[in-house]
Amino acid sequence: MAHDHSHAPAAGPSSERRLWAALALTTSFLLIEVVASFLTGSLALLSDAGHMATDAMGLGVALLAIKVGKRRADTKRTFGYRRLEILAAALNASGLFIVAGYVFYEAVRRFAEPSDVASLPMLIVAAAGLVINAVAMWLLRGGSEASLNVKGAYLEVWADFLGSVAVLVGAGLIWFTGARWIDPAIAVLIALWVLPRGWTLLRSALHVLLEGTPDGVDPSAVERTILAISGVKGVHDLHIWSVTTGVPLLSAHVRVEQLDDWDRVLTTLCNSLVRDHHIEHLTLQPEISEHCPTRGGPLDCES
Image (cartoon, rainbow, N blue to C red; front, side, top):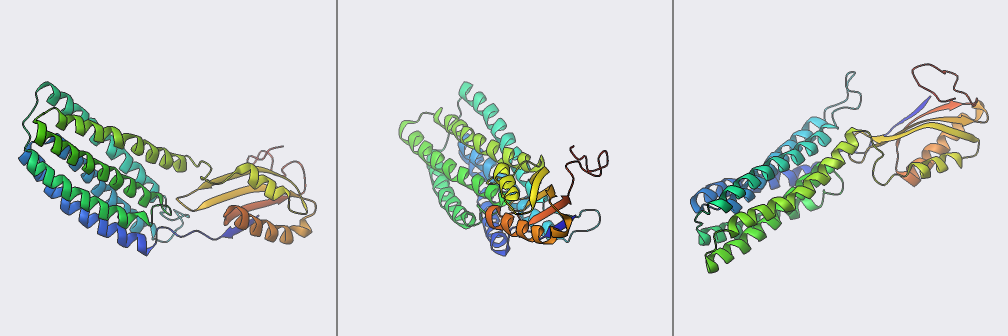
């Protein structure tokens, strides 16, 4: 059996610095927004504050995942702690659902018993939130494609940016019309906007936890690449999964014409899979028989 032990890097120093800066901005404005929501009586501000709290929690957990993920692998955790990044993303998504549920509950109550809202302070706070979220989005955008963890934080801040726009528009409408029902309506719209993005993030995290095929990898194309190598007669027990974002892994049983040629075949296989599919961590077992020699053993080989 042969192995290739290269691993793609986890979220790098640049992503970590951006997360720290975004966390500082988000936490600072969160405190302001919570106080303002009670002073103005605005559910929309409270809804936005709830999402900001989820952002702060998500950014904190993301940073914790990066720190712990840097710990070296040991005999108990041979892949290290990189999957904490995926668990953090799942936790972030779950937080979004909890906040949205509370907003829906409170909105129903306020539709039945409308509350007075101080629209001008609400307008000022919403405008400040728009600026804060825009800066945080800019900070996180660069690392959002390289890490599911950073992507989760980016999606939450993006949702909060749109939430700030909605609060700003709502505050203006309340100021001009005096219609108190606008505030809970805006709060519900913010929650409805966030829920699909939370589901997308949760689904992506669960896909990794269930060891699904990584996005962008076609198992059929991978199999064709393996079979195209000179000296390869067949492949079975092909598995492709990932530990965390950007770290795809592959294991397979490769049937070859003769074992003496395995070194050449392995080198060609590794080069082809890295070049064509960006899969660097491989575990390949050579076989010369159509039947697995360890039939009934722990490898669960196919006949």
